[in-house]
Image 1 (tube, rainbow, N blue to C red):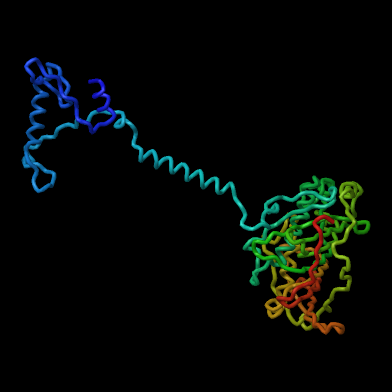
Image 2 (cartoon, rainbow, N blue to C red; image 1 turned 135 degrees about the horizontal axis):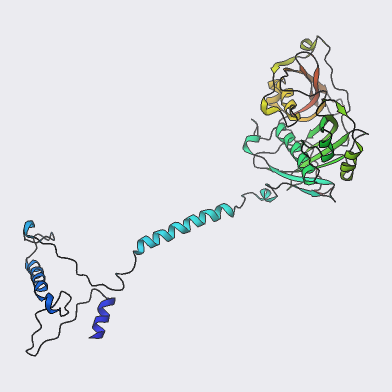
Length: 419
């Protein structure tokens, strides 16, 4: 008896055990629907319900439709009498599985975002780092990934992008070395005296232009330049192949933020920066040729290509309230012939900054194109001379650019990562 009841609890489809017979071999009349003897007080009602159940079950079904022949009006709902078993009391497994699946999918998505694996080996190189001090504390190195919004029409990084990388590494060098005051690249002693650095000259040689998704490695360092100046050099290379991308050098002087005049380097400032001087030149043979000067009153006639009405936007100003030096390069190239921009790429640029440009300035860009023939190799080289001036007359920047045909392979220079 006990075994039958236990089996019925785990196997609800098993038939209910037969009720014991009385002394005459008949089963008791007062049985409930589960085959268990009911209490005397509930015998009549249970018998009525059981009788109705038997009556409905006895009526044959029609057409296999599952409906009895009893009229709908006479049909009486009978409460479910499914026995309570261990299996029936468990939760809905389908809902539980759906909840577990949702949790695992969400966790997998988060893990995929955290466990990001670059698709290219060259992107493993400190792409998103802030750089580090190397070479016994005398050099700073930082990597950059070329973004989609930093490439031009020819699908390579623009010269402005590379020049912005130079400026960013220079500032991060000062910051990482612990010399950043409250100014734009100013040391604490410079900030006390309202002094800041301004670039006076710059030269860059571009051997190749990186493409979208490439990673570039930028090294920068500083050295002395005379008694009242500082020199900063850069070297950009491919971190995988070691091939040079760009070499640049620049000269900087100090300006007073209040008077907007050049100033001497105080001894306190010199004491701050001298421990970081590293005497090494990125460009061995610098272009020291004099830059062009357009005669007064004859600017338009001398320069074949002129672009006027250039004005700085608010976004072109830096923290020192003057136009960022990279913006001058974009203005200089505004007047370059479109035929040169379409068929050539910039190979080198020399810049001579004469005065700062404010937000209310209106400028004009002049470009003269020159073609030179090398008597030894017979190759024809193209260079341009540029003058960026105020429309009122004073010169802001003078420049010289050298160009090579697109697709021409520049001389490759491999420089080790540590000089």
